[in-house]
Image (cartoon, rainbow, N blue to C red):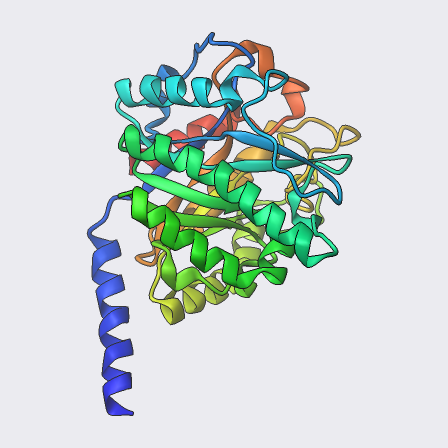
Length: 329
């Protein structure tokens, strides 16, 4: 019993010191462009961003097992060719990279509720998903990508196929030399069984904080504190630092009530978005167990900007100054 206690204690102390001496990941999730026109990666330097997340999308139909990727109907930046060129462009500008595959479910969008009914279908899905992930894992290794995300918000898949993920991690580590994470949804991170096999506990941090139309920074900080306590305990128990693989807010009123979605009926409000960013940075960015994060999102092409005044991107908005201030620290 004493041996176990000292092992846990030494692990936690090691985590504390390693994270204290490690610069924060100050990242941005990039929006894949439809064509090879890449315009705004260099502008991220002005925000003191030092990491970018490149996102190769795949598609799947509801209740089917085949993961579809690298097809002609996809945007250029979502396919292998575009992913490689985006990585090269970002590397040339001095950014470190997280390669972060996403699955889009036809008819629904969000992959969290995707599930299958038969063992045969699950085995077929596992084979297809493995092919998808290893394709981009090899690209990550080819370009010395620093961090690879093995999946994003696949809540039901993780629940139904826990052994698959440990097997997949072994396959990835056999060909990739960088660090690994998984992007769990904010309400699902505690149900992941394989955190200790990864280098970061990845969380897409869209925690609901306030139902107010335009909450103050202080009220948002107060809402964060009990969540922060739980995250700190979870990080220490797993001896693994937490990384916000996504965090961000639409530039609208009520943006902290359901921050995982844009709502066109809400009134545009840059100050509310700015306050939300100030709160999350002030609560988390000085913590030893917290590795940093990637804000959602940054357009590298004009053609992907839609509903700009109410969208997530902080480009050209008050929140950008907040991000630049904290990332500089």
